[in-house]
Image 1 (cartoon, helix red, strand yellow):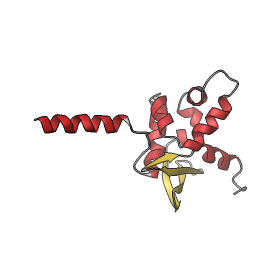
Image 2 (image 1 turned 90 degrees about the vertical axis):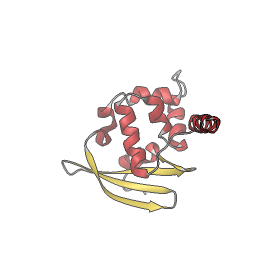
Image 3 (image 1 turned 30 degrees about the vertical axis):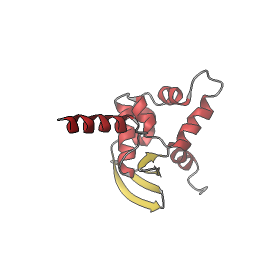
Image 4 (image 1 turned 90 degrees about the horizontal axis):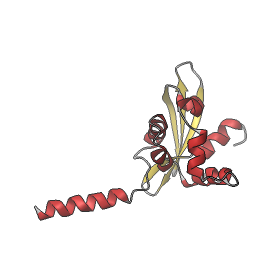
Length: 140
């Protein structure tokens, strides 16, 4: 009985130390979208990589808020995610070391490239790179 209690406490402590992220690149994208849909902005923030945190933090400077708060303000619902907020399928996946580019395809045939990065043992959405690449797709 004591062993079970110790295992439960250990699992709880390990879970509390989690920095977020997902087990696969695809789940990093899906979990971020799900968190925005559920308005769980702490979970959405945990699905973003460090580069995306810095992106939101830099945009928040001078606005009397932090990056997570700015993300919440700018991404209040699925519509605010643009193509990511629509129903889509994963059309292709290309991995280069710890970076994966996922090509999504909407029901009406539009495509977009979404980037994820492995940080530690978890996959996280590279929202900054995904935004920049969608604005300037020819500047790679």
